[in-house]
Image 1 (cartoon, rainbow, N blue to C red):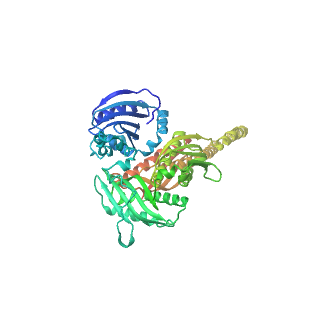
Image 2 (image 1 turned 90 degrees about the vertical axis):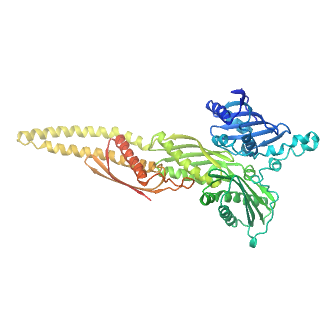
Image 3 (image 1 turned 45 degrees about the vertical axis):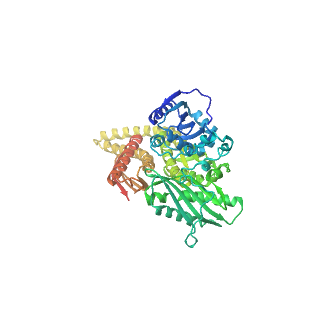
Length: 574
């Protein structure tokens, strides 16, 4: 792999364990945003030169050169080889990369980056040394012994792709060129499951296949003959390679591409069936579709598409830039996010969603809003809504989606300026009226005292109370409106539940405003190894919601100088 011109942080360091290598990586990451390693190692079969690119949480790209026969391995083959070498003596050069150098490194090695599975650092370093040596290259490396006798014939197999040369991990890298044709009952599509590292109930894969076949039947002219699953079972997860074989009545190139895209989406969409049936989280590593004998993979189709930029609403407020093949998904995503923000009381004046990447997508949002909250609260609300919808979309289109950057501009509401300009005029008239009122009151007081009557004091007190109530009501209305908006927005951020509706009524008694609040929620249920939020009781959730409402009431009461007291707070949890 290529690396920007840079001096190494550590040069020619000798490591003998995975722990020592982990410490070098952590040292590089502590001084920058990423790490680049050059590793020189060997085993009984061959010598290797491995280059690895990391970010702060995962492996991004791995490339390996087999020095003996000049063969280059990338992606999963290189990862497996490096994991088998963990624990052996290695000579390592370590480079620390800042954010710009990271981006340049990815851009200059995009082919290796797109082929490499993104494995978390903890999983990579903890699992590598304990795994059996299921590496392609060590099985190939008897080559150097024959190379002594025949050098010329042995160079021919070297340029072959890792899929062809690999012999040992047949279940994981299943050959897609010649699927064995087995007869099936009544012409039903054949379902084959190959297991590595453990087993799961085959019934889960059969149900998965049934759903794929059922939905694929809606694609005009396409029929499925065979579905093959390569399942690598780990702890609580299963890594899947899915190969779909079929035929299409159409020979048009564009029609075939559309059918292939729809099949990729169908395979990704129904993967959670494995989680429901076998309680193992499925991670799709590779999908291939073979129609009429021609194989296609998701990346091949994506690379043909261009990035599309345009408006997703008629008024042009919301702009989007993303790959054409996922434009429909992200246009709906952008409209949904803006609609939810406006429901939370945040008015969106303009928004630009810039979605970068191909296989892994990164959302960058520039947005101008009118908000009843301060800037940190508004940004937190926007990020929370973005992240939740990005997670849902990620599972739908089977791509890793992250929220990277949110540029927020707060626009002042025009109402505040109108109020400020009217105040001086109102105060001028009021001063004139109050001056005349004072003179009249003094005259009346004088006349009443001369007559021996002292009744003006109660009258003036009543007038004062009326004036105070009028002033108080002018502050109460905006305070209650702000309270309603804030409660509505923050209840959407409560974890473990989905907010449904809110009722808020108020009653003024003297200088105090009493509020009655009723809110409805649905308790979320998430499957997995540890079940739903089984450790969290309904009472605890209701207590968190009630405390949030009380906190917002205190904040609004303080900001608007209005005494607001909660009279009745009712939380409904279903």
